[in-house]
Structure formats: structure tokens, C-alpha cells
Image (cartoon, rainbow, N blue to C red; front, side, top):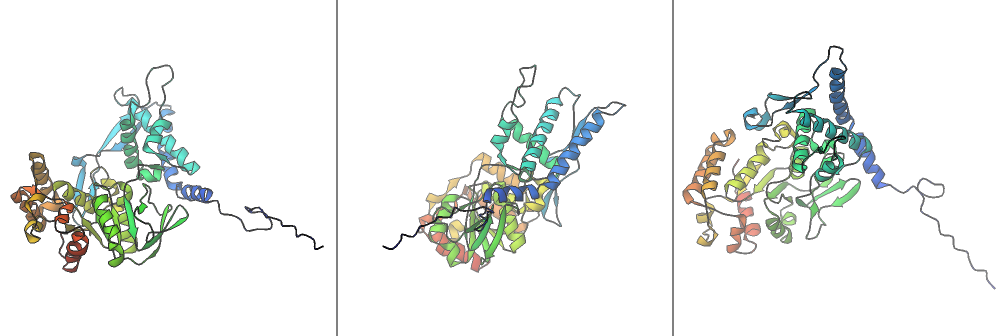
Length: 399
């Protein structure tokens, strides 16, 4: 009788003899985040050392922090770079000032928390950072933070004080934004083909720095950024990105920092033009302004966020008559809309731009605003099959 063969099943090995090592992606991601955190840790330690030096000085002293002022009055428009920049005004936060002591303590508390995250190669959400730093101060009934808004504001102060993005402090916000198109990326060690993302698309993470998101093969010729996920879904379902060889992104309204950072990298690293399809209203104009010139709160990071060459594809005030749209698409401008439009028209980067002055005036003269979805009244796929192809082929956009 023939002997039965004994089947030996080898266990998957990780660096063991007899088989190739398996890849620990979680460990790889942690190591990558640690490797990119050296400068951030140095800055936090430097800030702490300056406080300690003053505290232990034989002459005595009032430990303090210098916080750059994040206000419109401390923001200027650089005409040559075409971006917003932060001025030099600062506010001093002293330990021995009753009105400033709490914020001083909060700043150091959150800085220490960010240092721990960077050293461990881990990240936390804004909400998680709030809870990590929340406790009742010994001997009192005083909590370190009244609510998360206090924590978020201090984190923004730390960003500008340390010259580091929130993402470099290992803190992230809620994901908001989607991408699909002719590009392959590597996200935390996982290869993702954005050509095969189904109806949902790739969820753009809050942290899009090069040590987390790397670009692979890219065949796209441009990026089309749309305002809302509803419009994005129409473009994705019609496979616009495949027919026109592009990357399609959306920011669910005002694009979060992750989306803006990714758009900036796609434009500057891959040299892809960025076109914006936004509503014809003050909000759509403001979104374009933020993508193009940067925002007041993040003026200190415009060089890593703003895209001065981004183009406004539409919707335009003239489109109501140009495409013979019905009266049903008109949304009457209210007093708040009118005031906001005039405020945007007065921005330095719009004030001296004749094309934009004409555009905002035309919208005000119309007395109504319009959404991108208004084109659905022509045909379900009118925006993907007629409107955007027309605007791109004729290079009819605002700069």
C-alpha cells in the first residue's frame, strides 16, 4: 500500500528562516511619520527650552510665548507671488499675566502632546487631541479646556508659532473630499489606482504630506475641481475623467486643508493645471479665492496651499443668457449676498482684475445667483458633455 504523503503547512514568517518576511504596513507607516517629524520635534523642544531658560534665570523673568497675529490687518497680498502672506505683528502670551496664563498653559500642554505624537509616529484627530489634553487642574475645579473650540484655536496658534502645518504636528481633521482619475498613488504604503475607485472614489485624507501620500503613475493632463459631491458624482458616473484624461476632485463646499494641500501638490509637483467649477455666487467666488490666493487664517502657509495659476471655469453670470437657461434656476440675491459680493470685489487680487470686476458686477446686475446644478435643466449630463468641454476647448475661464 502506498504511504500517504504528509502535508506540512508552513506558517507565514516575518523575518524567520524558511520564508520571505511579511510586510508590516502599520509599522512602516509609523516609521515614515517618525522620519518626517525631526524638524517639528526640534521646534517644539526649542520653544520649551526658551520657556525653561527664562523660568530658571537667576534674575527672574516672566516666561512668555510670541504668537503671530492671525487677523486681516496682519495679512497682505504679495502681487509678485499672487498669494496672501502673514505680516510681522505678534502678541505676547505671558505666564504671570492673569488674562494670559490659561492660554500660556494650554499652548505648552498641546505642544507637549504634539511632541509625544511625533515621537511615537502616531496621529490624532482634532477631537482626540482635545480629549487627550482635557483634565481638571490639581487642587482646583478648573478644566484645561472649556470645549474643543478652545483647543482648536490654540493648535492654530501653535502652527503659526512653530512654522509647521497642523498635519506636521500629527493632528488631523475629519476627512472631506474625494478624488478619481488617471493617477496611481501610494497612501501610507498602500498602492491605490484612482482609475478603479467605483462610484465612491478615493477619500482624500486630512494629511496629504509627501511622507504619507506619494504620487505614482499619472497620465492625467489637468485637474478639474468641483464644488460639491453631487456634481462630482455626475462627472464620475459619466466617466468624464476617463474621456478627457484628467483627475476629478471635490471639496464638499469650502475645500478642507487636505484637499487644498493635495491640489497644490498635484499642480506644483506634477505640473497639472487646476480648473475650478464652482457656483455663480459670493460663496463660489470666495472658494476660488481661497484655492488661488490662500486664506487669512492660513496666510503663513500660502506657499504650500495656494495655487495662483488656478482658473475659474464657471458657472458665470453670462451663462444664464448664453445657455438660454430658464427663470427657474434663478436664486435671488439677499442683502447678505450683496454685501459679501462687494466685499470680495474689494479684495486686492480682485479689485485690480477687470475681468473679475465685470463678473461680480454682472451677477449683482442680474440680481440672482446660480448653482452648477442649474445646467441639469438643459439635460442630466449637459455639464459634462457640453458646458465644461466648451469652456475648456475655448479656454474661456477667469484668472
